[in-house]
Image (cartoon, rainbow, N blue to C red; front, side, top):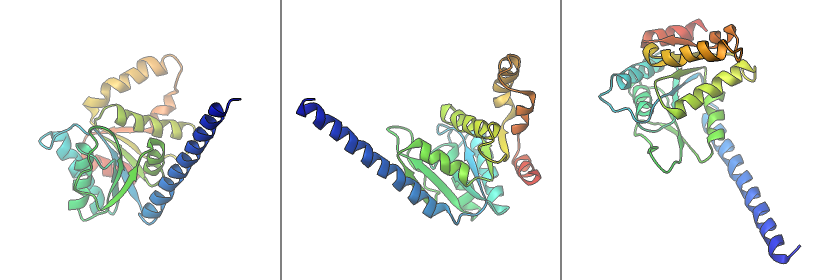
Length: 215
C-alpha cells in the first residue's frame, strides 16, 4: 500500500473517531439538560405555517393547556407550528423545550424557549423526543413531521418502546393518509388491524388532553 493511501485511511479513521465523540457529546449534553424535565409531551408540525393560520392557534392552545395541566412541552424549536407550541408553553408558564437542529434552511430557532438543546445529528435528536415524551402530538406537517410519526409508530409496533399516546390532530388533514393505510397497507397485509390502535385522531385541544389522561 502506498504512503498516500495509508495517510488517507488514517485521516478517515481519525475523522470517524472525532465524529463519534461529537455524537457522544450531544447525547451527554441533552441528557444533562433534560433529565429533570418531568412529564413532557412532544409536539410536531410544519415549520412553514404562519401565525395567522388556524392550525397555529390550535397548536398554541394545545401547548398552553398542556402546561396548565402540568406537562412540559417539547418541540423542534424552529418556526411555524414548533413556534406555536413553544409560545403556548411559554405563555402558560411551563417548561418550553426546543430541540434545535442545525439545517442549511428553514430552521431558525424561535424566541419562546426556556430550555434549549442544540443538535447536528437527527438520530440523537429523535432519541430525545422519544425518551422524554409521555405522548406525541402530531399536527399537520410535511416530511419531517411524517418522519417523526413513522419513527414512533415503528418503535411502538416493534415493542422497542412502551406504548404511549400518539395523537394525530386534524381529522381532515390526516384522512387521506389513513385511507391509504387501510386501502394499501392493511389490504396487502403489510400491517394488521390492531396497528390502528397505536394512534388516535382528534380535532381539539380538549380531546388531546383527554387522550393523554385516558392513557
